Length: 344
Image 1 (cartoon, rainbow, N blue to C red):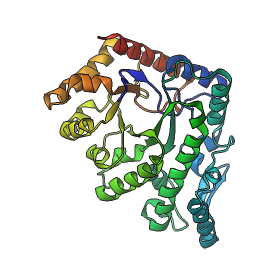
Image 2 (tube, helix red, strand yellow):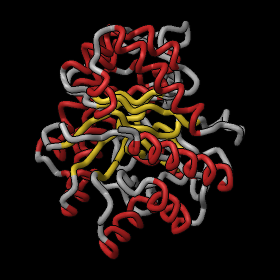
Image 3 (tube, rainbow, N blue to C red):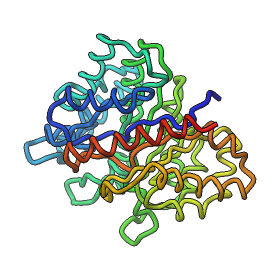
C-alpha cells in the first residue's frame, strides 16, 4: 500500500454555480486527489439522486424533480437489462445536462494534466440512499420493491464503470466513493431495512465496480452501525464524519482493527461543514484525529499503519453552503493535510 498519509479530497457537492470557480477550488486545495464536483445549485439535475437517474427504467425528470412512471415497466426493464447483459457501459453515461461539473473536470484534466495528482476521485450515490428517495406509483419507496432495488444495484454499478472508463485514460489510480447518507438513520423506526440486506447490497455494487483496478470507499456522514462497512466485502475505504461522530465511530474499534488489518483505509471527515464556525484550528482538528488514533492503537492497530492509510476530507458535501464558507473549509482542510504530511 502506498503512503496516503494526510492526503485530502472532497466528498462531492459544492455550492458553486460557476463551474470554473468550483474547479479552481478543487485543484487549489485538493491537488493530490482532485474530484469532480456535483453542483446542485446550478441545476436540479445535479442533485445527488436525479444526477444518476438517466436511463434507469421508469424514472422521469421534470422541473419538479424525479418521479416514477409505472407505465411500460416490463418493456423498460427489458431494455435496461439488455444493456447490462451486453455490457453497454456507454448506455449508462452521465450527460453534461446532469453533471456538467464532471465533464468540465474531464476537460480541464485534458488541458492541464495531473502533475500533482496521485489519484482521481469519482462517486455515485449509494443504492440505499437512491432507492429510499424515490416512491413508486403506490407511494412506496423503491427500497421495498425487490425488482427495482435489483435494477438500482446493477444500474449504479454501471454508472460507476462508465466513470472509470472515462477517467482511466489519465493513468492515475481511481478512488471511487459510494455516498450513503441514508445509512446515517439505520436502526431507527424510519429505516426498516436489515443489516444482511445492506451488507449484501453494498457488496454487490462494490463487486461490480472492482472488476476494475480501483479503490472503493463508502461515505456516510451520519452515525450508523459501522460494522456494516467492515463486513461488506471489497470495501477499501471507510469515510466518516470524524468531527461530529468520532466517539460513536470509535465504539466499533474492534471492527475497524479487523478492517485495517486486511488493508483498509480510513477517510477522516475532519473539517465540519454545516457545523463550521471559522473558529476551528489546525491543532484542534489534528487533536481529534490523534484521539481516534489513540483508541485504535489501544486495540492493537499499528500507529504507522493508521497514518500511512489516513485520508482526510470535509465531514460531508458542501452543496447547501455558500461559496465563501466552502472556500474557508477547503483552505483549512488543505492546511490540516500539509501539517499531517510534515509530521515525521
